[in-house]
Length: 338
Image (tube, rainbow, N blue to C red; front, side, top):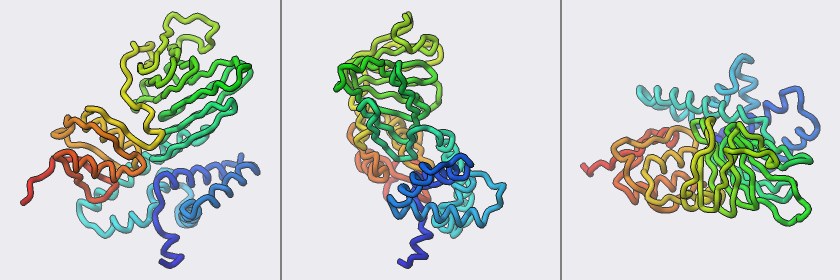
């Protein structure tokens, strides 16, 4: 393949997200030498990064200044756009719909661009925190660190995180808390998972080791101040926090933190839930036909290769994938051979 042809190849949604983020940061008027060095390291890390950056530069020269960032993010996948243009009728309309969905998808990620740590669609990130605790970020997640002299706090802005708190320093007395709009979650020497619900209306806590004290937003996160609404969630339990308070702990789903190792573990779950979870890890549109939504699924699926995961579902269940491109797929009942 020629260098020119290689330069025009489309890039992944995650790489595109990162490239747009760097361009916005560098063009904000607030970028400093550290940002410039960070961009250089990112460009040097992979050829796809340099290709995405070059493609954005080309679009800057071609598109009017008034274009939105969302439209630019949809247009940048030029290779896919050219393939869609070769189709007629319904496929042409489908392409337009896909571009619109891609624009919305990219815009939602840009809303968390200023977070201390963030991931794009299908990405995961592991961070060792200043106290040696380990933070895992799942797909499309964003957090801010708020460590100070009184507490070690993580503000979960979007997505899902898994925490492994450190125990090596006996002198460390600051409480470790995760903050969300619905409340605070204080580690009691533990491992746990926190996820903002997809509708933005709540937070789910799952404890995989030891215990966590959950408080509603109406209570101060400071453990020294009493809170009648506080609930201690034990290992193997899960609960949800909402604006009106903390729910009742119940049994946690097994392997709730398997995503940090790139796996989705399901145990007798409806196909609709499994497909919805896979959809979080891939760009584009993925849906399930109501006629097969209730089929039960048990097994382990790879999150780093959702195409393979979907094929595994079609092998295990009487379903098939229907769609014109990998960007618009629907799981439907398998049709009998003609």
